[in-house]
Length: 214
Ligand code: 3PG
Image (cartoon, rainbow, N blue to C red; front, side):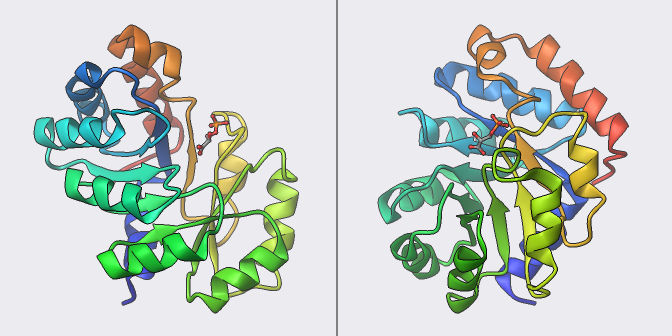
């Protein structure tokens, strides 16, 4: 099974991938517990904050069973730092062939962002089959995902950007949408405030609503 196929199967069990921006690394262990204790032991930690790699390292240390990805990976240096910290997959908003090459050299799966047929063909050329559809709602939402999946039978899409508890199910109902991502479970304000009770509640609600049994 290719690296992408096995990652797709793993992420399909989680269905929802919380996208987290951690501005204060001190919050990382509590966040790790909030995810794992409430039944969703997965996250994409974005490199939009300076401490992202350190946050991944602390989360993994607190709960080694967490599957952690690194998001907003814009170059090979960030991928290397994320991998060293314990991230097991890389995600980006766009498709940069140099980042694809860097991740391949590191041996870590990379999920690039796309929102058009030409970008999908570029991804296929690079032998990538699991792609982030970003920004999902602004790029046409569920209708656009259906339209993009139709001609490209080889790909799976992870919609992210503008998803909510109300529309995520519509995406997940489509074939070859193994999972979707978003910040609604872990909004930056709640993370900054260290409000793990509110975050835990959001996670439990999602686990219940989407029948997540990883
Ligand atoms: C991402 O980086 O994947 C997005 O910023 C998540 O978008 P959202 O905040 O609309 O969920």
